Amino acid sequence: MPITPARMPLLDHLGELRRRLTIVVVSVIVTAVVIYFATPTLIEIMIDPIRSALPEGSQLTILSALGGFTIRFKVAFFFGLIICTPIILWEAMGFFLPALHKNERRWAVPTVGAMVALFFIGMVFCYFVIQKAAFGWLLAQTDAFAEQVVNAEDFLDIMMKLEVGFGIAFQLPLAIFYLSTLHLVPYKVFREQWRYIYVGLLTLSAVVTPDASPVTMVLMFAALISLYELALAVARVVITARDGREALKWTREDYEAHEFDA
Image 1 (cartoon, one colour):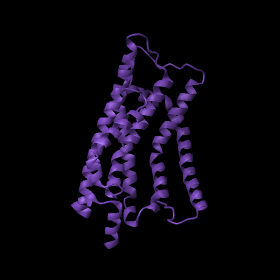
Image 2 (tube, rainbow, N blue to C red):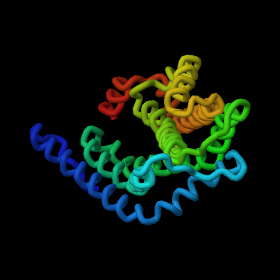
Image 3 (spheres, one colour):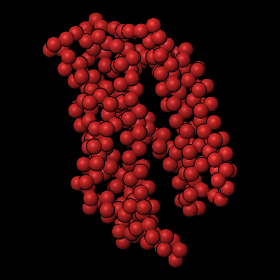
């Protein structure tokens, strides 16, 4: 991984940031252009989980002349971002890595791998579990008083936002793991303040889910709690094995003092 030097003038840092952003933007654009030609098949795959929730005999509907192109462009860009996620994370890690200590840099490659894996796990969870439940509830609200027109742009927009939302939300365990193992937030604080954190996770679930469905929010909340507790369990094992049980109470200052003494 090409790493940004730890000490550089401000203009050099900006130049390095521009170079890495250029790599990301070009990668996404090229990938999206290639994917554009496969978007009809990709749209069919995207719609598949919610087919049973759609009104019988209904089909995707386009309501404007530019609708077809707009949808295909959005879907191509969406999949371009997904495919280029490893590149995006790799370039971001290369830029921010100098801020870490040398003994912390060895986590760079595992971190990128974990971020990519968690992002795709979140999207897969959303695809197989969330989409049908969310759209089933939303469409059921219409049945009593109106006939639902399956607006392709509207439906696909919500589906893509849900996928990205869950992919981002599933980064939570990685954030919790590093905040605790690097002692930026003491493990003890995470464990003692769990009530407030649960309320924060519930709020996050409401904000990240774009469909206003309580079903989606509750399912995401349950997933986030599970990931949070799993991350803390793993962090506890790592901290205890590396620094001892007393380190569960350490702040960042305590950790750095211990590293200096060592």
